[in-house]
Image 1 (cartoon, rainbow, N blue to C red):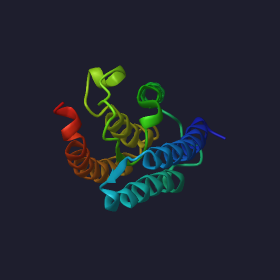
Image 2 (tube, rainbow, N blue to C red):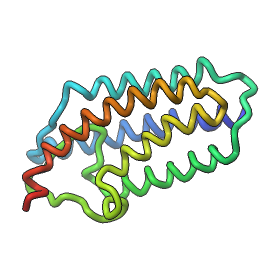
Image 3 (tube, rainbow, N blue to C red):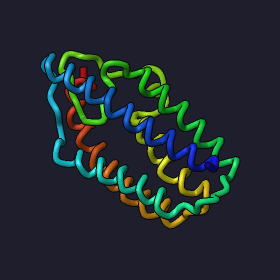
Image 4 (spheres, helix red, strand yellow):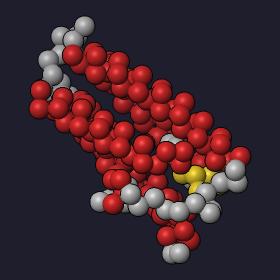
Length: 166
């Protein structure tokens, strides 16, 4: 098993754990009166991430050597991911869920950028394939991801507008 296989295994376990946490938080928030926005685009994110991981598994050479600088970048991105999730706490989901009476989070990484989780994902989708020289996968999935994120940010910003105006 190569370092890249360990990275892929960790990535898969991480994504599954995140889906579990996100689904738990989503159910709780909706039960408390929150509303979901942009539901139609969500399956496209699931398809994108599943296809990205499948492409990495399919096209990565069995003996893939990892670029150590990009491996460090990946580890740093995971720190960013943990920071985002811990900052949002019970409000963190993989969907656009609006809790009308909740404050807009402005601490943690949100002090520096409005959508830090999307920056982490942008980095991951590029860095992981580039670790083993799969620039084509990095390029194609980065473009698709940027298109989806642009759509999602518009949805999210509209959903949060009333809370930001307070």
